[in-house]
Figure 1 (cartoon, rainbow, N blue to C red):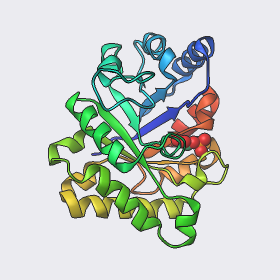
Figure 2: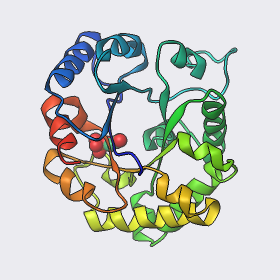
Figure 3: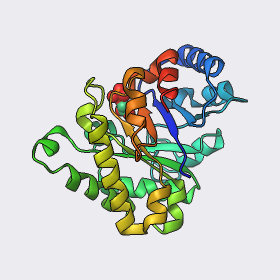
Figure 4: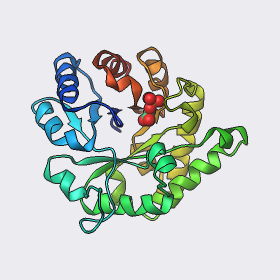
Length: 249
Ligand code: PGA
């Protein structure tokens, strides 16, 4: 059975004190859940965050990493550095990285390969822009994002991969894809993975939905058969909201 995951992407929010406070509150209030629970604070607070979650079921994950292991890459973070502080999962290809920091499918392919070489797990994000959807190209865009960055992989790689479909028009906008739109795309993603890697792998891969998930809409979205959880932005910044979403699984 594929795993259910609720992951909070904190983006460029929360200083060290706030990070500790939010994690402590989350850990204290966390309900019994079958879902894996992850939080992704900013790099400078990862080490402390790892200490704060000790003994709980919350996993600390990174928002990004570089594709090389070391070297002259000012301002960048190597995957081995993450592993060394106890961070074994990384978010790759978030639409904000693609839009504001020029991350392309080609670059992401290198990051995917590096994460796998390090034995890391990844949450690989992708999704169409509003214009793509208006033009009826959303399936093509999603398919090419998957093909370009992931279709060269051997089958064994898939146990390290979690997919996160995040329609760009729904991120941070308050506008959510309807549960039907999410299900339609998630089913398409699973078909696409089936075409490349077979049904067993496609059925086993966890596919998260991201984009304005809130306590009020989480359970309806998560009830769809091909939606295995969520990647949460804004609503992950308040413990009660995040827990409300976890309760929707
Ligand atoms: P949002 O962000 O929940 O604030 O829309 C989702 C994301 O960027 O992962």
